[in-house]
Length: 208
Figure 1 (cartoon, rainbow, N blue to C red):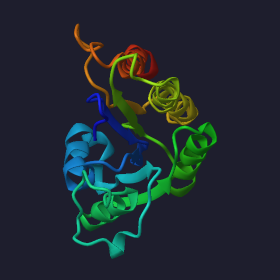
Figure 2 (cartoon, rainbow, N blue to C red):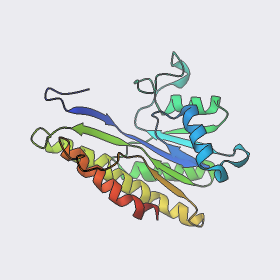
Figure 3 (cartoon, rainbow, N blue to C red):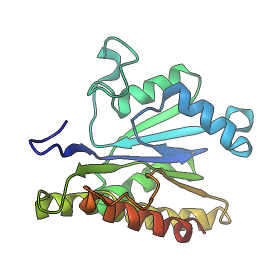
Figure 4 (cartoon, helix red, strand yellow):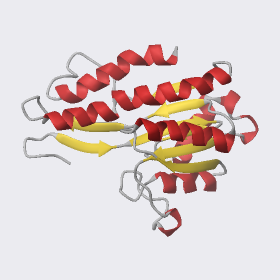
């Protein structure tokens, strides 16, 4: 979706967390991500013991969704349809509604993950708000929204997860999905790029 000056405007408030037990965002998960997860973390998926907590703001009634599975880029794709996809692919999953703008909801998500499955082993943060436009054409409220969801949401998610990683002997993993930062990245999308730069800079520290 674009506005009149060509700015790309999409708002996706998704969040993942994986626990062998993991939590994850609703977009593009399903069977493809289960294969990726199994290949990437063989030590966590032995004997098919992985489980997934899928979290995002939008929900639906998965068993009333047709066609199924829905196009992952459509509004029909929600945490509930992803939960259904994972279960039908042979995994175990639970969908928990979360808006990453609110720290209390993130903290509750981690607590629910541990309550249901006993531990949190991997956190995947793929939430994002996008507005690609110049500073001149980016309202301050839009800038604040992007920072609330992008770097602040990540920070709150990492902070909420660290106590659980400590209980597991610091064997947890944090995966942050964000675009690469390159020399021309800021051109035409400064407000968005500022938050992504923070996320990239914080990545090694958060995962260390």
